[in-house]
Image 1: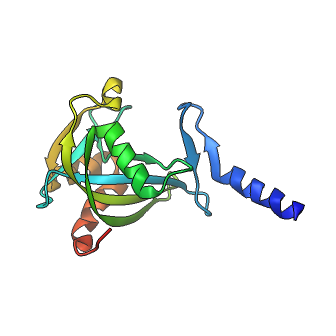
Image 2: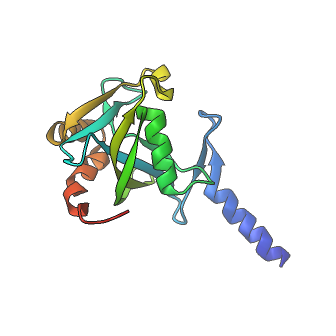
Length: 167
């Protein structure tokens, strides 16, 4: 029994670790060692013609899909909703899960959801870091993401394939 508890503790230590550059952030990993992330494609409405992107905090002229790491006590959906509010200052209704996208280069697996925005706040957490938000057509967003975040570009490629799925 003691050996089993030790093994479980060792597995747990591998799956969760603090990120030193972000003191309140704890990274979680899946069984393959990929960082667990969550994100939302935030649409203005049900037509899914305009998507909200946020500027990168490292490169303010680069645009990304809002998302980030899943905390140890969160499920992917809850993490996605939290990240969208922190990074973009929006809330809404999650309509469906788009899928899990893998980034082998950065060792990330991101659960991506489709969210219809119904609330936009004037001031949000990451605004203090200089982050901006802007609506783009799907084609404009694809061009912006292809330059800087090709895996996120793929989210938009898959958007129509998931239209019939329910969360």
